Image (cartoon, rainbow over all chains, first blue to last red; front, top):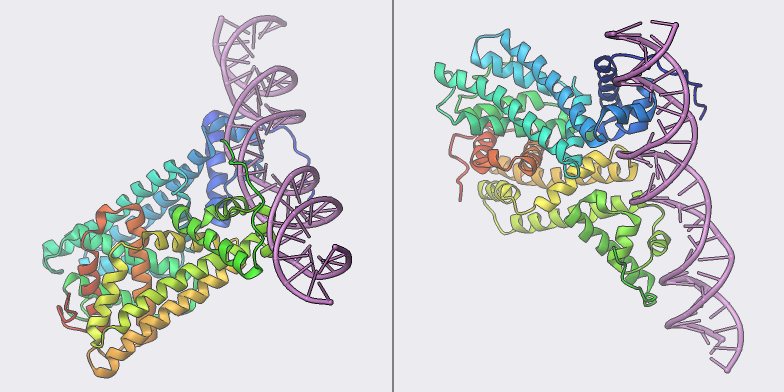
Length: 208
Length: 208
DNA sequence: ATTCATATTGATCTAATGATCAATAACTGA
DNA sequence: TCAGTTATTGATCATTAGATCAATATGAAT
């Protein structure tokens, strides 16, 4: 271990520095997992002293919660944008399933799984997790409700169905984290399952 | 904190002591989570010295992996016994879904979630997780294959469908850990989803 | 009884963690 | 130019973690 000799960090606006520290924490979480977001690791990545990181945060628990929150906020925003491009309910639902299961967000999945675990010992994080799960569920409710109104989907309880779909997707992604093998037909099989869930005839959710 | 004055622990057979330590670790994991399985915590619960725990284990990583393994082995065994009582494929599948989603194994679910997270930093644990996921999948394959042969289920790829069902259930249970609210109709909705997954007509999986 | 193997322990080490605080230095406004 | 505010730091604590090892004591074998 050789520690690079450190110059005194340039003095910056609190807002700027705050943002840099937050960015360092996010980058660490996405690269190494939430458990790697420690006082010293964040400080090193941000190029400042541990004491400075502490100066900007009431506690590490809070920084970890904030980091989770920010990462998931971006995730939701991205998928939301994707959905906004489409009108047809079935297409939107297919797009949702497809993008969430395509494996391109493994780093975020790790963050989710670690948040579920760490949330049991970090109340701030647990609150953020609940909050962002609700946010995700709302997005899905929007898609399902839409289809129910147009009659494309059966007359299901959108709220309950959304929780169901969210749970299914989360589980499949967590599974893929550990056993990428068994994850071959996840998209197609999830589509079939959702057809059952929403009372659609087999094949109704066009895989396009 | 007052530490109870400790007598020297009775000298026991290695096998006996090993078993006691393993039991202490299991009890801790089920009660407080895998992260609570530390050298000192296990020693305290087993009524021995940390050094003795270390004496019986090459490393804590190994003990944690072993603990996870044992807990899940019991889980699989219990559900396996439940399945052995039934013959009809649909009934077996319903029983499987029902028992795994009834919330009576929240302690084991916590262990699973923590194992997914900790497995990223504990290779022994990761191996156990993969191993036990495979075991679970095998159990489910058994149920599905059965139904496919009798013609009760459609001609699906049992292996892939089993992974799918396992992922769905795991996700729903993890979700219930954090948001018990949204978990109202999980059994019924999962049943509908599985009907879609296996190419059954709605209602084919009798909820009895 | 004596010997011997080893279960069990106390003491201790090292490496992380989060946190605190007085001291320093850079910017800002007068 | 000077004073005041505060961003930034080095040093240091208190905890907690896993791990090691010489010393002790207990049971079994001779």
